[in-house]
Image (tube, rainbow, N blue to C red; front, top):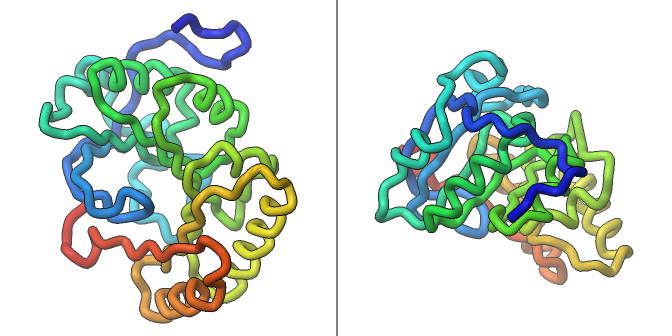
Length: 223
């Protein structure tokens, strides 16, 4: 598919990778299925609870070609997750996604949503199969349309006031009458108090399609 001249991409076929590994998807809609994870290097959000702080430095990691990355993906895997860091910092992300997808894999992107223009361009292409938006309270996406681009929104819950923000965003999206993506409430680092807050809020708001995400990979001791 030709690349539109309006797209903000470069044609370089190398990208910085922090790590690649096979694991079980521990979060969100596809929880429990085997996935191949590609963790890209570089992040400009820098959450205090981040469990991947080694990805923050944009100059870290290992420079790899798209083909080298694809060659590491086992044929037995169907679902590839591109995460970070923040994947949308990379101007040639579309090329990596295309390279993976044309080899028959389904491509799942995890993003904080802080770069709306990049995400909008991605969603105009046929290769980004599933978008997980994980907004961060200290740097929320400014454009409400960012949420409409996502298949699911994963909210990290640390305290009760976080739930007020989730409710407000749900109500804002509902007023637009364009559909609300799946909302997952995820207790930070599987903490007991945060988990209880999420469980009770999901039950209390049974009229909304809130769902619990409990990071099963942490419970079973895998990445």
